[in-house]
Image (cartoon, helix red, strand yellow):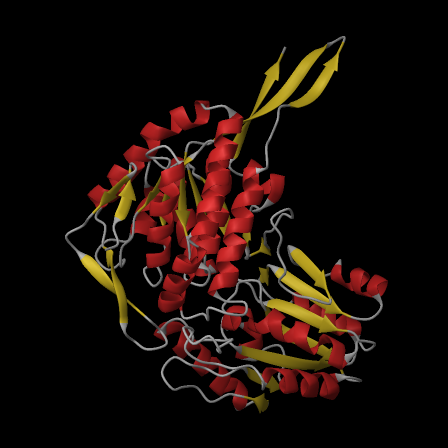
Length: 466
């Protein structure tokens, strides 16, 4: 039985909604359908708990966050199996077990961070220091692609900095998050971490959170379109925002790259989590000299990847998570197939399964290149002039990540610095670390997560003279 967690208590709701396994269509469980009154109760619980939590010694808050990390490790298999059933990703490979391992690692690293006072000036004219104070109540709105790990990315720096949290997961994947919050509450004071869920049909919890006067900041990961709605709704009380929005990451393969050596990295850069990753490689620009060889090596690697039900230990990729995303992907691939050459895949089904798909012969202006597909389809674009390739890579409203592939690291770094994105990788794509800040530019959002920079995003700065 899955319930809300409000004020440290399990709270049942009269209304519930079904959550289905995208691999089979079977009902995994029923989630609580929260009301406006439930959200108000969660916000009140967070506001009541936050001052006491902030007043605790920094070491106590760090220890409690460390205890959450230990709980994630202890219950990793339970949560991974639940996550696979509702999200579709396999247990193995870069799937649910990997996600739970990453969540525990991020929680543990965040527990180790601190923001001591900064001495800005201390001389004969006076002393000035800057101190970091919690913002208050943080509202977290998370997506369906990495439900547990992204929740941890939002939650842990918020509570480590002394805030309280109201979390709202996607209605497509709420179950593992509900269970995770229930477990984590064993290590936290009542009210510090609350979770509300709903199907967003009669009552849109995310919109209500963005408007709620009792929530001081929203952290949102999701589409750029929804991010705009969050910004508009948050204007009423000038909420602070951290927005990690859509990406259409470009990779550029320089002519000296070794096709056989980079094929595996290219594949996982593009197809991790079945391509359902904000910072996945979504457009690949390959120099004419090695274009065909790169395509051949990539197709050879991709064709060996097993696709199936995530609960099957042999599966490495699973289904697309939901019908809306599947239909969008299928339309983009169909259009691309009429314009280019399908080198692998391209035929959707059965159900929500979509095979790894690679399509060459496309260009900027084609929908699969210009739009974020958020699924297992990669367009490969041939180029001859590097300047034109850089311009094409930057010719997109998004700016989350990018990559350059080459045996000449210095040349690759020079190109990477010219990409308009928040993170740029050399000979890999999409690798994030808890000790390295991560965020986007342009319409991929603003603010950063991870490391000390991400922790600061959950604070306000007070300057003390004297």
